[in-house]
Image 1 (cartoon, helix red, strand yellow):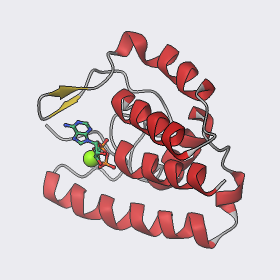
Image 2 (cartoon, rainbow, N blue to C red):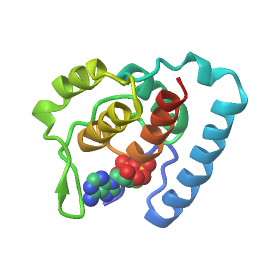
Image 3 (cartoon, rainbow, N blue to C red):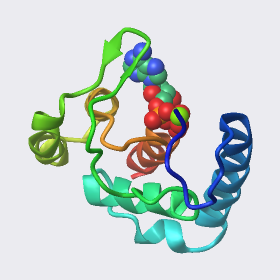
Amino acid sequence: MILENKLNITNQVELAKIEEKISKQKAKQLFDSSDITKVEVGTFTGLSFIHAYLFADIYPFTGKLRKVNIAKGDFRFAPLMYLQQSMKHIDAMPQGNFDEIIEKYVEMNIAHPFREGNGRATRIWLDLILKT
Ligand SMILES: Nc1ncnc2c1ncn2[C@@H]1O[C@H](COP(=O)(O)OP(=O)(O)O)[C@@H](O)[C@H]1O
Ligand SMILES: [Mg+2]
């Protein structure tokens, strides 16, 4: 099973390759341009902006909460029915010191709000919180 994509690619290896290439270019563009300054720091809105920025050319679901439950290895990320309230909870979490920031990042990783691309989007999101 391969994720629905805007490039109409049906081969998983090919999709992974082109997805990596495009998202890396976009990540560079995000920092090289002043677009990074538009990101709201420490909120789901900000994370959605980053996610859409990286993946909008590839996937139709960018910046939007996933509509299926997902797992990696034997870890199940937040069940769908809690996702929305989880985003509200994380928005409100403090980010005043290193421990608070890491706790917030871990909560976001456990939530895994998007269908794909959570790792890359959330690490940029973390980077911005750490820099403020
Ligand atoms: N078993 C796990 N438990 C918790 N988090 C995980 C696990 N496996 C991977 N992750 C996190 O999820 C990310 C992968 O999620 P994914 O949505 O595929 O994002 P990306 O495609 O950007 O890597 C990893 O980068 C890591 O941060
Ligand atoms: Mg992935």
